[in-house]
Image 1: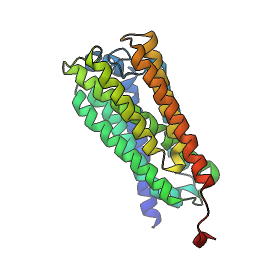
Image 2: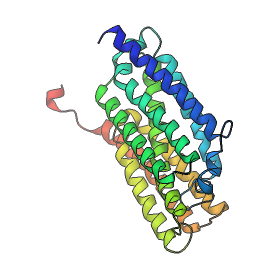
Image 3: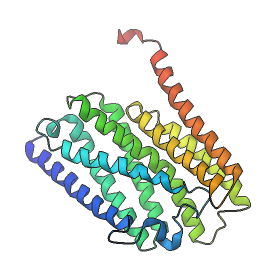
Length: 268
């Protein structure tokens, strides 16, 4: 791959980062309406049984710092031409664009469109995790390698949890009861599905612990919200804690299982 292709990728990543920052300024209310106040309040922390409590969203600060650091890192002379940057740059750029688009469509109250956008974001991040799993270690330096892995993992795990919360918010916005009665059963089933998705995503080893950390973070704050805030539900709160524990235990089990697996004869 020639230097002009690298330069094009670097510029696109940087423009995507700028677009993402602008979208974030809109989402936090600096130049727009805060996310929790947009779409008729359907995305607020007390709108549905699957909405994490407010402090959970502070994880975005860590993710955004990671994305900003990645943007700078991929301009460095060595890393910018590394196989790692080449294999991840376009997907990282796509994720930042989708992130900003999600924030902008929620401003318009297009909440079902936001579901489609976050699903697309989840797929892009899952593909990024698979790419990292197949790429192995490349000559990008340990700092760059871990920057990409941790940022991608945290990003993916959080978006996996947020996707289900987004769907619940869209249903509530459409007039479906998402706080009482049968909604409790539906929320418990959704938590089981969230856990299954998180465990499946953790099979990609490079991003495993990032996915686990953010999924456990989101599920724990979801539980906190159901115990301490409206809509209260001790059943959903308890199941959210079980889901968080299941994700954490699965991360350990997958790691230990890989380390203890016998070496294949052909690999010796």
